Length: 509
Image (cartoon, rainbow, N blue to C red):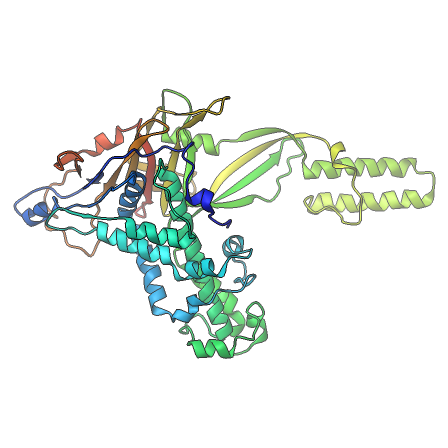
């Protein structure tokens, strides 16, 4: 992955939905699906007034709203617990030594795409140690406390950890919550793959199978001279020859980073019907463009992204070979000498073989006609989701730019459901809404508010199991800090302000 430089961490204010200077002492966080006040749940009812908030000493609305929304994602919290616990069990040496460039498990395209170039040792060590993962777990744990009194905490420790991870300062002036979320999510994903790669490398140079504990530092030093890439093939011992395979199997069985999903982009030539190999890509947050209409739906925004796109003047690889074949056949018919005729016929035969087998790999010893003479075709481009993330983070892009390069906010209503179906009939997934971040204001100023569903995950007890439950939200007003109730219907009606949506995969379907 490219380095997160200053221009990424210090976000551009000109094209952002920003946060004005407001002090949210105990908010703005809304909770959904809590328990109802009742005689059996009186103690729990008293604790409802103790929702942990985030202080806002500056323009930190964009930070606080994202952290509060992330605090309501159960799968993310389980992932953070697993990763921090895993690193705490392993020897410190496993993550302290940067893995050499070019050392990857077999068939690990995700790791090779993220660490395929030189990365500074200080940054790679931070990724392997999971510094941001650890600090995010701590602040999300604190936000999920249920104190009996009003309590606020500060996001400063987490922000400092993020700044130290990039060795850059995060500006507080007019920032975009989506860009902050993107930086955090990508960093967490990088740390996941860096930690997995560090464990694989430690086992490789230690000559251990997947079920063995990671070696002590002395054992690693003794085997340091071995090539980590060739280690599985060169050394013997139990499980060593299959270490790349067993590591890959183990990582496939575990659930990876919950916000990561995968796309495949497929093009098809409308003239010859040729379909090249699909181009895969990954995402941690999904950006959907909001059309410039008075009202639309989230489903329509998804359709706009996944609809078939038609592109003119595209040079199809198969059509280029067919064109080259026609040129060689014409040369063979018009050749004056046997040598030139034989050369043209040999080239034509190789082109036929490439057309029938793999048009993306033309014969290397055949000189094709210049690319500018290749025919132009119309193609259809399809985009489909191949790996559905456990947590779907959706960003509704509301930026509008005109010819004069000025920008404004698109205030179209976007209706979004509480339950979101995605995928086709054969691979449909259903998601449940767990968090919403809204933006109020213009394209250049405003403030963010965060809504999150209050879920009680097992094995925690629920004193009001058999009591009728209502769905409501609550927040402390910046002005009077009173708790108010807001129904899910009211949350779903915030169609002009909705900016970020957090859905969690419903595993019951």
